Amino acid sequence: MALFNIDLASAKDKSLSKLLLSAAKPFLSKYGEVQYLAIDSAARTLTVDVLPLGERDTIRVELIGYGLTSDETGRGWLTFAQLSTSRQWLTLVAEKALPERRIMLPSATPMALLQAML
Image (cartoon, rainbow, N blue to C red; front, side, top):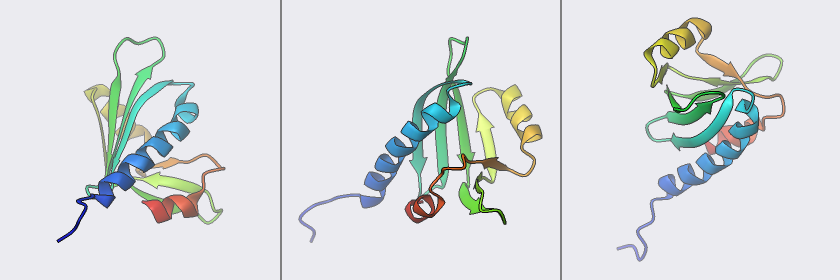
């Protein structure tokens, strides 16, 4: 019988979500304000809410089946099996714009650290 009932995976996800939120804000600032970011490592989902510049309503983006990879140059990529948004038209645009289902990460991304944490 455990003295403490601590869900370590949930605590790790919350901590990682806060860290990624602080990194996503400047990365996406030219498009809008990142208001929420949550990672669920068990379900392999990444959810982001962004308030686009000039808009009143947020857009939710969900990456399902996420992963991290590096190419032959060492550049980091966020990969995903499926992408959905709260706007059907935007989901269609994203599917067309990202046929390889990957997003290039900033060059300063600490890939080894992220891969260990995810």
